[in-house]
Image (cartoon, rainbow, N blue to C red; front, side, top):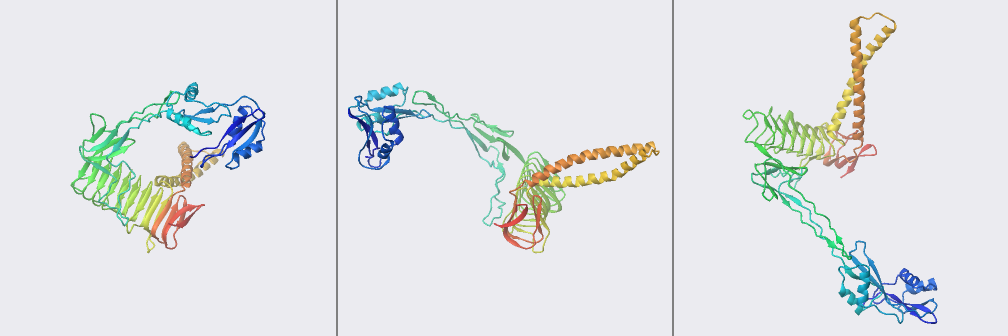
Length: 533
């Protein structure tokens, strides 16, 4: 049986020694510090430290003896050392062997010693009896255990609709989007369960070895938060939709907006659509018509040269053919089969199968996926990543790809640059008039009252222009710093990128001069470089 090494004193009239008993069957070696602290506490300090250290640390199966002091007739009894864990949940007891003629402790003494230290709860008498039956020294015994607290379980809410606004649409094996199985918008039916509250489970206090309370982590309660068109169950643990519509979760609050269904096309028979909730168009949105919704817009057919505006997402299952006049904008994501000759603006990500001769911008990512997945012609902007199979064409179609800052930031930056240039131009037109007028005044030439009034007006305009210029320059500086700070933006081409494409990352641009395949473009050390995927 495994036993740790231990030590015991042999006290004689002629002198005192300490016996070092080796471990058995893989037991632990002695700790030199434990031996020396015991000897010092008992008044034995007349020993050779090196000799004692060798006896303790050198492996041997023999009992080693080391002289530690002069003889005496006072013997040492068996000793129990008690330590309590920092959380007061465990009591460790460690015994030192008695010297020759020393007395052994009994159960009553052990229990009395624990009581003296205010240890009153969870005492393990079976382990105490086990020690008394087979004493092992320099070995830790756990003689008492506290009752740990039971932590409370937090309340949680289970939702039965899609709560992830960034959820990507389902894809086929070839990487194309399955527009029949889009899962980015949660349509709910009247009477459908929306959410279930699982109440908090209270915890239970524990008890430490001294009988004191131990408090567990307190559970957190929750309640269902919801808006109109929703019914709360009597026990306040479930909510149900009162209408057929779209469900969404915004900052922990459940919303259900009813759906305006257009059974066919948006055309002369329907006129323009303006709706506070969500709109579903079963057919196409014809040229010249518009659909405006505060929620989501889903179009089962094609969007022609029309205008779409949504406070949420826009899904166009058969694509956008804007005929150079169409515009589609959403504060959320935009998902469509293709984009051709249109302006498309998204506050989230854009997922499509191809982009042709269009102006497309996304605050996040633009991913052009599927077997073809090509981008050709136009201006494509994304705040983070643009990813496609093919960019440009073998015909050298001019295609501008920009990443590295929010499209809104870059658009404002360009707008301010134009405005600053225009203000400077106007100021330069006014400046000679003011200079000439001052020269005439210095020469004391006669000036008509009408001319004085005219110049005063120009001077006022000049001063206002100066103030406006200062404000716009400051904003321009801030925007430039934002553009410069973008480090993680990239362009990824899984297939081929062709000459005629210009890639801009932040404020750096690179014209593609030759074909490249399976490439990503990133900004490193002030320049745009191509790296393999």
